Length: 359
Ligand SMILES: O=c1ccn([C@@H]2O[C@H](COP(=O)(O)OP(=O)(O)O[C@H]3O[C@H](CO)[C@@H](O)[C@H](O)[C@H]3O)[C@@H](O)[C@H]2O)c(=O)[nH]1
Image 1 (cartoon, protein in one colour):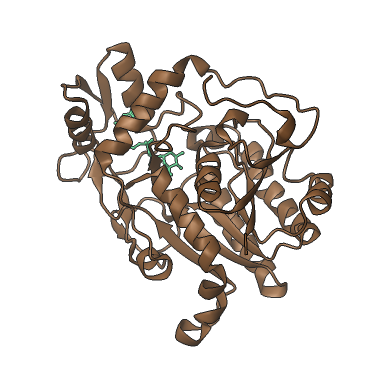
Image 2 (cartoon, helix red, strand yellow):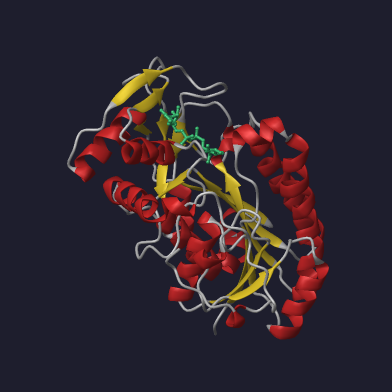
């Protein structure tokens, strides 16, 4: 039977990639997006699109009436900038935590008892080496704190009600959908791949922020995971949801919530990533040493063995491919910056919106 999946933030970078992958794999996709940060043309045309905030009860009543019951909700809608969360913590708590509580209140309207939460590896804080789901939690920023709060609040909600939750903890997503349908939405996010792209497009040296870390070459280590691989893990989690939560109870105890790391399992330094980009592009990239970013960490990577065991999932896109797609996306879409003004929809359904993936 076709599964109907609601994706909050389904016009954002990760949410829209999940939406495209789910459509390709035969799911019926419904999206709620405020278009505050997302871009409607990122979402698949066949998705049923509802423009608004996840706290708006009326949207769920419309979905219940027009679509019916939702089998799984994937909650991606959130603010994602660590520096911004430090400058305006209340904005992050309101958007990421208060709105999440309202989502929990609204899920019964669409009769949804399965929630996949987009969590973040940032909740592990400043650690080195391979991180397991059981590694100590120590959020170092308001952004990370909001993700951890949501995991805990979800846990409390799941203890008492019929709701079950899978918390997928993302490491560093990069790349785009392979067909270029959607990609990262903010070239100025400050992330390595976006900064590298800007340096390449503007023909200026790329700044390696921190060359004195206790790592194999002095630059920071991260686990870069392709966004399409990440999206595939969500498709698997949707299909295996009940197995992971209930049927494995006999094997490792009952689970109302589960956390699963989503990373490649490989730690890559900044210098190694630049070498991979040079190989992919077939040319040298100029770099210069720069001081560490405030609050930056040497870094870590995923122990991704639980995802392999439970979801039969492993990241498979080569790093060079993700880098090429990422840079190519911005070569084609950089004039889209800053994000376009949200389109005001006359109908909440997408059928009335003519979409094209070319900006
Ligand atoms: O111009 C740059 C930008 C980054 N880096 C380095 O690249 C590495 C990765 O940086 P980045 O891509 O910003 O990743 P994170 O530091 O892991 O932070 C990102 O990933 C987190 C976990 O997903 C999110 O919470 C953050 O918002 C997001 O910025 C670090 O060593 C940085 O010092 C540079 O050398 N030069």
